[in-house]
Image (cartoon, rainbow, N blue to C red):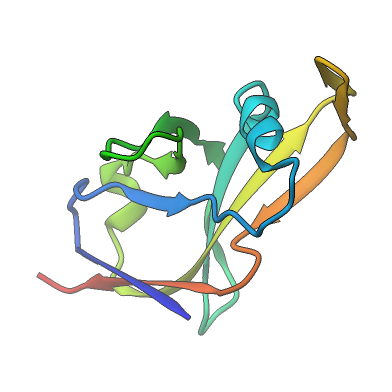
Length: 128
């Protein structure tokens, strides 16, 4: 389980998830394909099951580090209305590959990939 904390009414820090390399030989090509995908963020209250943020536009950015390989983060920038109510929420990033994306000899299939894959993200909005 991953935990993320933000103060009520705050817009920083942004929430971000790292794409984790799982040892597959096509991982670098996946990075290329995800750059052309539609990425959204959803946040659901875990007590009431009410959606607070529904499929809001998210984005991918290059992670700044000292490695030789390019690594990417999937990010969402908060709006004040997103953090208006204190509580605990489940965060979900969806990556929608619309159509077959081709790159060199690799084709990534179309469809929806939901993140996080390995761990759930719990977002706590702390009262002021």
